[in-house]
Image 1 (tube, one colour):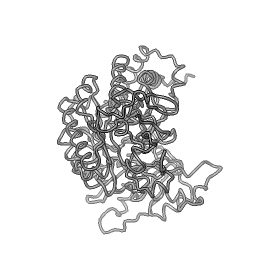
Image 2 (cartoon, rainbow over the protein chains, first blue to last red; image 1 turned 90 degrees about the vertical axis):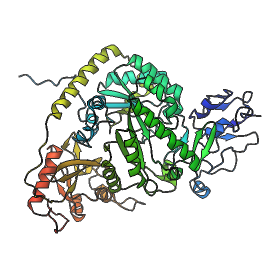
Image 3 (spheres, each protein chain N blue to C red; image 1 turned 135 degrees about the horizontal axis):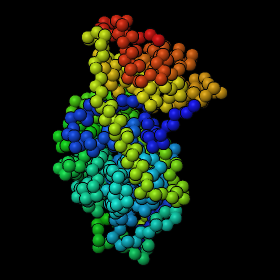
Image 4 (tube, chains in turn brown, cyan; image 1 turned 30 degrees about the horizontal axis):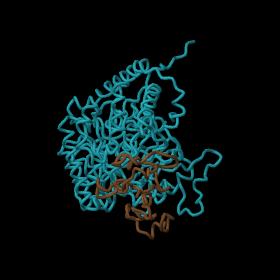
Length: 92
Length: 501
């Protein structure tokens, strides 16, 4: 059970600092999660911390490939606008 | 024959980045401050508008993470051609940042201030931020340190800030009402949770106010930045100004919202209007009754280097710094010489009190004038001006109001006149746009004006004036004001459109 970082990641380091398991490491072109270390924060926090602080929609996914922060969920930009500017994706 | 030699130790970039000579509120705006505070800001370009003509600053981008989302910010942005807050080209580790600061300080001796301003929130990156400050206070004790923050994590870091001898902090405070805050901040990250809407905004506001108070209690100078967002916090900012002054902030900097769809921000994509220059000025004037306002801010990048209004960041990329050999001990000696000579000059200037102008009839109305200036004199060709400095002349004298950015329409002799061609898809020519930028001004002073813009300016009710080239701006503005006064047009019940050349 582990979360993953997608290519939407902008390498802002926010998740690295809040991960209770030190599971996130720097890589090219973007940060990655060590699936041996990631616990999805079970037992530590109510919400996975990387997804709770990540400012980028669609950057964190679960094992099913579902976005923890789907399009429009963080910025409040309506879906029609996102589609208009090509910023909308159904799934990873 | 002996040619005069210009001393190389003198302040080379005198007046450099900003084109005005007396822009902003100084020196009187800071005159209410006790001497020990004035002494602290006299060489800080972001706090003293007088200082910004002589002293340079730099930001190091060591703080990428952020703990809130603002609707005017897009965390994806990274562009070397953009100049606005939150934008950087090269993220640095603390060690790289130290190297860069020492290289810049040696190369630009008038660089007095090192700030950490992002691209995220410095206090959401406490390890990287304080590691940088720690090393710098040891290796470059002659550099002032400052930090700017959204305030969310400020209270928990106030003691650390005080410990590192950081005596200038900027807090961005856009509201004191959570309902308004919810329209600006969609969420915050707080105690391991993402908290949205009014609840999140309420926590942010409480932390900002608490942090402001804790800082001022410790004698740390606080400037408050506010982003003017029309229809969201425009009227509310007057209250913000009052409250932050009461809590001890010493300077308020109201900046216009920057929002373009290509920036990908919420306000940009939602096509939220930016304030007009007149709206910004009106609000700054309204807040000025309560506290000192800063009007010389150029809303710089989180990795800016140089005088305000210029960016020399390209000269100091990491690959260039890696091959520089810096002797900081020697640099410090030279830096001190340069600083002392600038301060001496400023002190001498401060003694001169300008008398109230004579010959202006009582009751004359004020007149706004735009100036294409450089280094404090009327110097630029109308079509070459990157920004116009706006001055108000009145029977009280001349005061700087702000700067308005233009897009150059003149590309030199080859393309002269092209500026008036409407490009495909554009609704107005650059010349027309620049004339619109000057709305509210009755005169534009520049070194030269072409025939075509001359006619268009006159048609727009703005009198072009090229008769004061190379004269000090304030003198030129006052001379023109007196000329207009002499025609009797400034007294009530007269035609407001001036056609003097």
